[in-house]
Amino acid sequence: MTSMCRAGSQSARWRTAAVLLLLSLMLLPSVRRMTESSMTAHMLIQYPCLMLLGALLVQELPARWVSAAQRWNELGIAGLVGSALTLAVLMVPRVLDLALVDARVEALKLIALVASGAALRLSWQRAGVVVQVFFLGNLLPMTAVVGTLYQDSAARVCNAYRLDDQQALGLALVMIAIATAALWLLQVATRRTGNDALFREP
Amino acid sequence: MLRTALSTLALALLGWWSAAWITKDFHAWTAEGARRLIVIEQPVAVPKVALAGPGLVDADLYTWLNGAGRATIVDFVYTRCPTVCTTLGSGFQQLQHALATETTDGVKLLSISFDPAHDDASSLQRYATQWRADPNRWAIATVRDADQLQGLLTAFQVVVIDDGRGGYEHNAALLVLDGRGRLVRIFDDAEFELALNYARSIAQREAGE
Image (tube, rainbow over all chains, first blue to last red; front, side):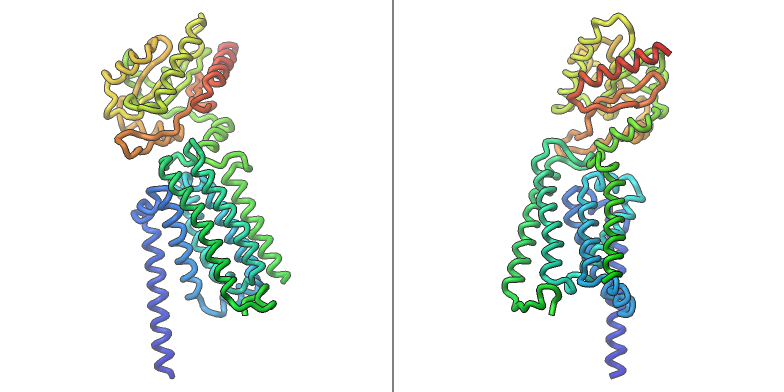
């Protein structure tokens, strides 16, 4: 038993180290230059990678901290509202341009992405169908609208990125919004639901 | 639930505040829009740059702009540019035509190439000939020292990127500079009329002072 625990905590330590290593890799200036070299990579590679690492990182935190934080996050409401707002702000085209030239904006953007990944991880399971609908119902239409604007705009919305890049990103954002909605519906439909599950996962 | 309500409210306020900050109170969604607002709030002084081009011998940009009752409409171009600079070129030609009827020396035109490696004296001269630029009204130039280019582009937030086809994409616009060497207003690259009227008004105002 003791040896199992030790093995477990040792592998946990390795896992934490691996997540931190990957996170610091993503933050290296050369990797950032690469992941920010196109508008599409910026939003579809850097954003999700940092959010994923935030989600993995939060699992490594002591359970005590997490449960203390969760007292402020019933039904995952605070976390999902925070993530939705963060992602909405980070879709403003000026953020992408400013992040390339203003170190403060870049730092805040990176922190916000990691934090919103963590918040999603902490909140998604606690939120029932109703809160999830509220979250997706805000985020997905907004993503689709932004994607449509990026595709239809004859002018570039970012000074640092090309028009063809912007249009490709726009198309991808619309498809991602549709695919996410479809996957979520499929997941709800195929799951056994009681009344209870509407507000909180069993 | 009270705690959750409080933390949600705090996050919502933080989100609102960040959105207001990044969009300049919901007026500018793009960096280009913000650049134009910022210039209105706070004119940008030109950095020290020496120009070179047909009819310009080691002209210092500040000195060139400086003069009583003078305003300058500036655009940034590269002479090989097939698309947006053609619009700018013909627009500048029309501006020159509109200015030709004026007797006063109020408004000048200046095209600055951001591609000094390619745009040597003969390329600039060819561009001037192509658009029939009158050297007394419309100067075509580039920076004399390539080292000074980035400072100028950064100060005016002119962003030049590779277009993937051997040319450049850039945030083309009409920049109005006053006689004290400050960038005071930026107009869209189709708003020639507005830019001209604005340049005339500041030239007159400065002449009156």
